[in-house]
Image 1 (cartoon, rainbow, N blue to C red):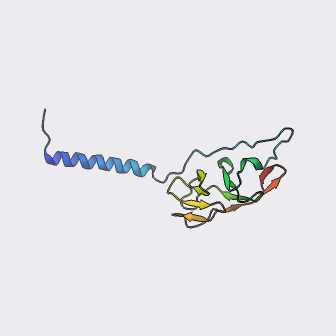
Image 2: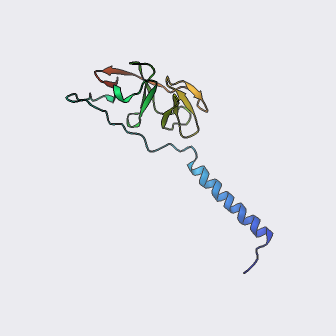
Image 3: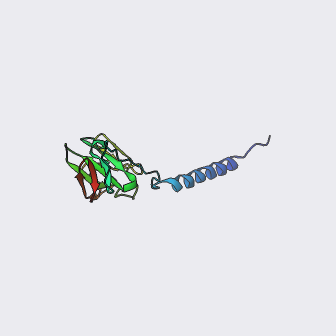
Length: 143
C-alpha cells in the first residue's frame, strides 16, 4: 500500500471541503417546494363557497392555519377575530411552514412572525402582508 505525502493529504482534504461547500450553497435558502394543502371541512348539507380557505372550526383560537395552495395564513387571535396573511416570508420569499408557540415560523432562515403578521424575530424586517378575509357562514373566505 502506497503512503500519501502530507501535501497530498492536505490537497485531498481541501477538495473535500470545497465539494461540501458547493453542495451546501446549492441548497441554502431554497424555497420550500412542499406547500401545505388544506381541505375545507364542511358540515352536513352545507357546501363551501368557491373562495373558502378554511372552515371556522379548522382555525384554532390563539393560533392559525397555513393554507399553502392558497398562499394564505389564517389566524384567529380571539374568538371570531380572523386575520388573513400572506404565507410568503418577507425575508427571502420562502413559504412559512409551521405555527407553534403563538408564532408563524419560516423554515429557510429562522424568521418568525406574531399571529398578527408582525415580525417576532428576523432576519425578516417586514411583517407578513395582510390578505383580506371574512366570514361567510361557517367558512373563512378570501375577499
